[in-house]
Image 1: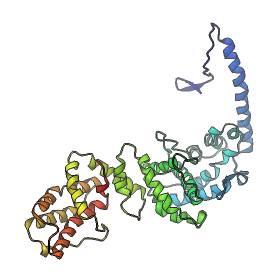
Image 2 (image 1 turned 90 degrees about the vertical axis):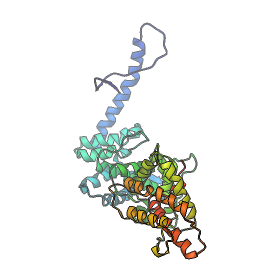
Image 3 (image 1 turned 45 degrees about the vertical axis):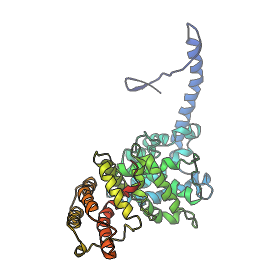
Length: 394
């Protein structure tokens, strides 16, 4: 398409390697090729409008062996969309959502998309508007495949976001459920891009999506007997770096890969990644990092989720008492942001250094030794709940 002053014009561009003074024959030849192509397109457009938007026929088109037809995929996607819509409090019109999911793939049966496959979604948008569908539904049909890459725009409305996300979620879970897992550079169903898209949409629209919980809720839609949930969780973790371009990948891993029982809450992960990245970018972090790396080494055999109980009566010097007082204050305080909380916890570097300078952690008295480990453990456990910072590579 060629534009002038922001408006589409009836002109075209052709590149020719001919050497001549009169290009009229070159232009005329290209016009002869172009006219019937445009005529065909207009014929397809008018024919499609006569037939209307319909998914009739998609029950005969196989989506994937093991996952049924495109008609069956639409049924699954409707359930996924409804499940995601229930996560938010926005005033989503359920009739619009149902209609958008019903018509999203209808243009695949059109003559236009059969001839020009790259127009899927876009033609559905134009047909929907021409046939009297609401602008919201038409836009959701057009934007169902967004984002299409790292620099791609995201869906422009919450309705479009849910439609686009539900399609990606169904394809992701469906493919893993039949063992179609990307390997190396092989990713024929663009599942890596799908995960990035799901994450970006959820973050942009603040949709409280937890991958682990969502898979559990939708498990009856897909082939049973395959342990695909763990594979999807691992795949999502691996793809997070693609959704956070420019952020140190080790920060992402420190946030999500703390233990075997990963809970992939997208908004929580996003908040933690951005908070840790902000703190890690500060000038003081490198010095604080060395101190807390020492703490993590002391606690390497300890379970961070067990809870640490400190007995003040076992303190033997002021360094212990000062550290405990500072830690208790920092842990119990209220903070406006996660960054503020991390900043306060890393602010315990000075009393921690004093503690290490004046206290032998591995005391001969086993109860004193355990109490001192619990003291530093209660501090690191607070940081660990956000990120296992020992995994960060500076």
